[in-house]
Amino acid sequence: MKETLIQKIVQGLKDMCYIWAKEMRSTVTDEGVFIFFVLVPILYPLLYSWIYNNETVHEVPVVVVDNSRSHLSRQFLRQYDAAPGVQIVGHCTSLDEARQQVGKQAARGIVYIPSDFETRVNRMEQSVVSVYSDMSLMLYYKAIYQTAVAVSSDINSKIQINLAGNVTAREDQIHAQPLAYDEVALFNPTAGYGSFVIPAVLILIIQQTLLLGIGLAAGTARESNRYQDLVPMSRQYHGIFRIVLGKALCYFMIYAVLAAYLTLVVPRMFHFTALPRPDALLAVMIPYLLSCIFFGLMLSCVVRYRENVILLVVFTSIPLLFLSGVSWPESAMPGPWKAVAWLFPSTFGVRAFVRINSMGATLADVQQEYQALWLQVLAYFFMACLVYRYQIISARQHAAEKVSAIKEKIQQAKSKKTDNASTD
Image (cartoon, rainbow, N blue to C red; front, side):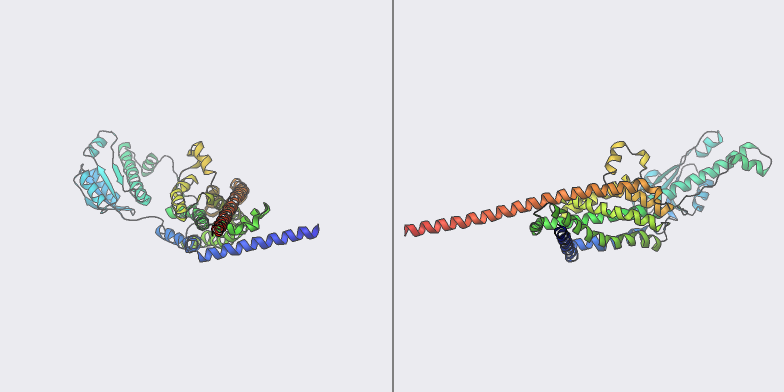
């Protein structure tokens, strides 16, 4: 009994190693899989991080439509142009002319001051300054809008002081700012867009490239009907576990190195905020990689051709970034969308990594995400086994049908030959 059990274990390990070696060979020899498994995770984060490496933008070109031409409007524009975030590059006579400048990309925003700007202020009425921004890049909007808000607040304070008729400078200060406050950007000292979005993108890259590579390999196998190679090894149900674990081991070994590169090297290379605790980061990345791998193996059943997986994964990249709760707050998500977000490993992986990397969180602080990832590992592992069992059974039936068809043709050929001999 003991010898039989030991023999089964040894045979299982041999089969798993065979699948691992076969999948590793396929990963290296298949150009498409190699690109998505190795080149994209290495090069794409560098390109993305380099684009946002400046964190903030400066001297964003802006055109002005000043219909007021008053002392107050000129004061507003002088302070606006003096700010480091924007630069006034021209004056236009109408909004249509200003739109043409933005359309030509000579400017990235418009400041519109109406003709009654100073008149309304002198009448003790609220006046308005309209700001328009090119939304092709959120950094443009941030610089143009926040500069306008800062200048407006400063001018408002000066107007309040002039109307108050205070005697001392201290009275002016209290009147302009009765409640003093300091603005501190928690966990993002530079208030940069790169430190905000790059950690989430790095974790999403792990999931998306894994799905692309696994789906591409599955499409290749299905196109060449390569699942027949696994049929002799899986005549019993326990052979499915060997196949899934052998493939998962191959992918896990590759992405263990890539995950360390993405989570430890890239943020420090571009000087983004990075405060990870090694124990917490390791504890979270293990179930995250496994859940992504088993999730990809499960989804491989819907990939009939190699090209399909590229369309599927690329289409879902931006929605998954929003569903992770980074740019779209989780508290503002409707219930159905929250349920959809829980299906993807990236949701919990991004939330856990952002807290660990940017906030220095411990494993106890991300316990909910940690447990959710392990639940996904178990669920997607058994689903992947069911998917591969179905694929192998289908391949076995297809092979049996082919053998039957060949035997039938041979039998028909023999019968025809016998009939011809009888006739002679």
